[in-house]
Amino acid sequence: MVLASAPDKNVFSAGPVPNALTIDVEDYYQVSGFESRVARNQWHLYPSRVKENTERLLVILRRRQVRATFFVLGWVGQNCPDLVRQIRDEGHEIGAHSFWHHRIYTQSPKAFREDLVRTVQLLGDLAGQPIRCYRAPSFSITRASWWALEILVQEGFRYDCSVFPIWHDRYGAPGAPLGIYRVETAAGPIWEFPPAVYRFLGIPVPCGGGGYFRLYPLWWSLWCLRAIRRQDRPFLFYLHPWELDPQQPRLPGPLVNRFRHYWNLSATARRLEVLLDEFPFAPVSQVMEQYLRQKGTEFPVVRISELSKPTGIATARAIKPAEGVKLR
Image (tube, rainbow, N blue to C red; front, side, top):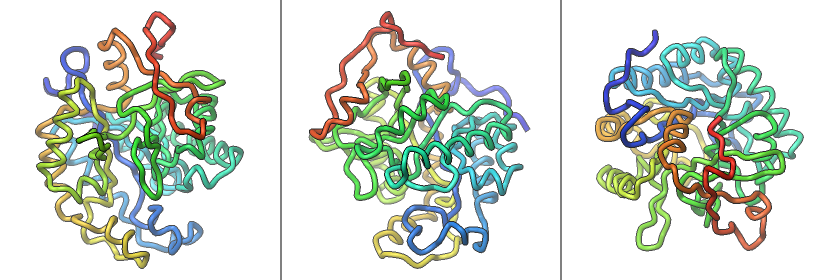
């Protein structure tokens, strides 16, 4: 089923740039928080709930005629190919989320490329179109793995949504730009669209979805997202299908990981509907294309050599479209 024409709040050719809605399609037992207890070669032994949870998300989006980018785990695509085709047929964008959900900074460049190529070939065949958007497992493009951006360019990616400009025990790039920026690599440029972060009293506050969306009071999440929009920039929001499933099996693991994973699951669907009613959303590629066309002045850009400096991330300089920014 293909979505009908979108309502006015999701028209992309004119008006304010919409925000990017992204879904990381993985099952409850495939998250990084439980990888020490759930071996990848045992994934097939766990009852899968990813199809029904993703279909529940699709129903919510269909009712509001909202399209999103679905970053699909290659393993899920291999085992649920009809789900990928369903996502495509309903007008959503397919992005890559690796095959085995290994955090990039635990891999060698060779292993990362092999995983990436396998995923892209599989998802591209299922989607019937090139895969141009990427999200790393657990936002694991960090100071220890900037090299992955160059490989993404070499493999044909235009957009990455993996660099979280905060500190976290599992991910993060403190000091990275909060908004959209371009990264120059030896292989060419790639656009980075980070998850939503609002600087409150000088502190970068993550407010772009996931556990933060379940942990914070809803009013605080909405306040931060409105504040980002007042800065005249779109935000990127992310969610996982398992976050709409309070009945999922409970897995053993460290207390902090269980708290992060299971907290407030019963509220996610209702909160998501409130979010969709307030803000316009679109897939990453459409948001990026409209944003780059409408901005029309200067774009932040950093070089991968600057990102790799041990002192942290260099201040992004600005470039004008005349210097060669290309939308495609």
